[in-house]
Length: 191
Image 1: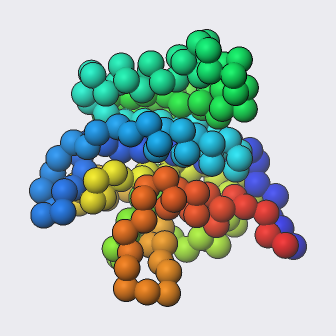
Image 2 (image 1 turned 180 degrees about the vertical axis):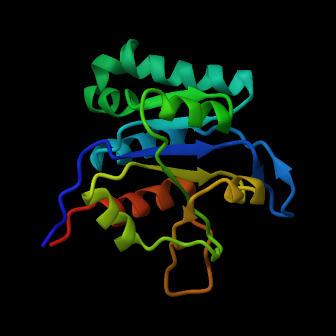
Image 3 (image 1 turned 135 degrees about the vertical axis):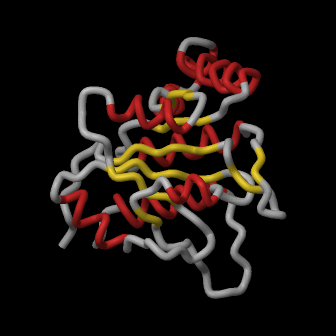
């Protein structure tokens, strides 16, 4: 039997700073058009409330807003109304503190969970989150770009979801693929 979850109980945050490079150094990563479109479409499919793109870089913020505007008010809004619906979920914020303040305005701060390709100590199982969603709990799920969220960001979280793994030693999914899998595990219909 499937658990009933209220639409909008989950918000997503795609973090571009601070994230790690392959040497575990803190960097800022570039926004990509594919991540914006694909994660927004997955978010809309699974009933996510908001999809936040977090970058401190003004040129990247402008780029995201130009992409959104094209699909919300420009030619894209007429060409593909389904894409418009998905991109309406996106909000751009400059840093994690601004994000937390924005999602907490007028309501209690949601439970913040990170995603990570590496096993972490404070993990929440997908079934625990699904049950908490059914009980009305709100979540903000963080996805890191580059080579993942920094240890400082992970330390601010209430927990970490288990890594998405296949049956091989290879474990380097695109963030948009990982987001779709995580959303299906948390919000997908179970038969």
